Image (cartoon, rainbow, N blue to C red; front, side, top):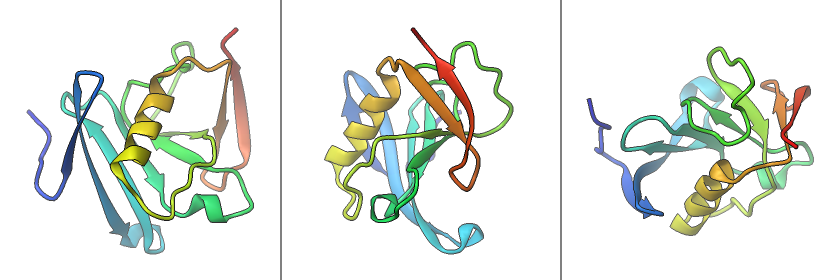
Length: 126
């Protein structure tokens, strides 16, 4: 079953099709969330907008199975990992591509955090 494309923007990056949308999440205190999903649903992430304005760790929530650097890590449900601090006050296709590219590049280290951004595990990929 394919991805519902209603209300989503299509983006082609390195030959793959992704869909993205920005929505307010009433279950998460009204935060605005960027959702990105691949056409085959193997890559699914969400990113809370405006994290760059905070003085704490920025992270994404990995909901799908594709993410470089977590191959040996047993995951159950959603996994939150620290990210670089992207300029995220305005969401553009360029930011969406930056996030997708970062998720698929090999990382020396992946830092897992809880829902508050506190570090719970560090995975070395050397």
